[in-house]
Image 1 (cartoon, rainbow, N blue to C red):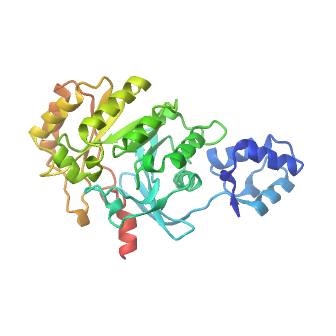
Image 2 (cartoon, rainbow, N blue to C red):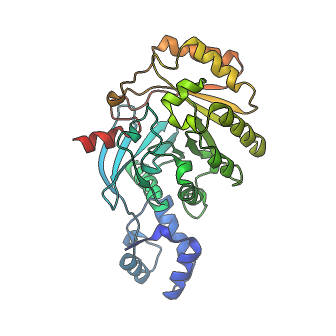
Image 3 (cartoon, rainbow, N blue to C red):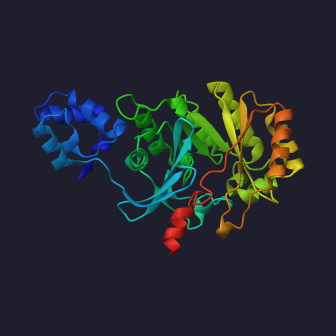
Length: 343
């Protein structure tokens, strides 16, 4: 049975007209599914009963299955999904004051092998389709009592710019007023530094946020942490980000996971400040590492984190320190999937 989200608004309008109903019902259907989170066609009360019956006969509204949920004391919850081919992916919902951010996956596994991330431990399997990505969002919304999801970050399992076309198709549906209607500036794409993807993104005329995983100001250490650095080293990556900023006039956020004994000492902070201070619109998001037993990584002490942040602030860089979330569940990317598959 076809997932109705595979259709564009115009395609659904055409289908409804062929069935003998006014095309405006198509907009109502997308609003029921994407904005209200109603996935049962029989509950779409403003549609004619015969149309609801036809929709149920021909379409489904959700293609992936929720198989596990973990909830932390801070209100963060993580969902594990099974896809049609029995592959597993994860998504996380994070409360932030009056906002709720959905962290979603773009691939089954990951081919880039970052040493601090559990996503690549079992390798790469395949890209997610646009519908599977949107289904993660629907599940996150439906797991919230208020059906609330205000922001989306492509920071789960996988590299979004390695699944460029499918992610962009999902983003356009997330942003579309007739679908999810999530503002572009509330959608963030995170990349390990795929320069051709960054160049493509700068031509999209989208007001989405770009986040770049940096994690070291030193080529040798970054290459150890992130093998992608061997193909796209720091000098080329920073130049690509500079070009993105100039062409889009949009800020780039540099994600920096602080790992004890690896990239979190005073010299690292000073070198990071030197690397980024020439960029016109750059921000640093410091992230204490989530402990991952399989990868043997730990966060630095709080005092060391404070010193690191202070160095960047004194250099004039906007800095945020991400609050640790989901520490009492398998919160890091790929952890829940890895635990489930190893069980």
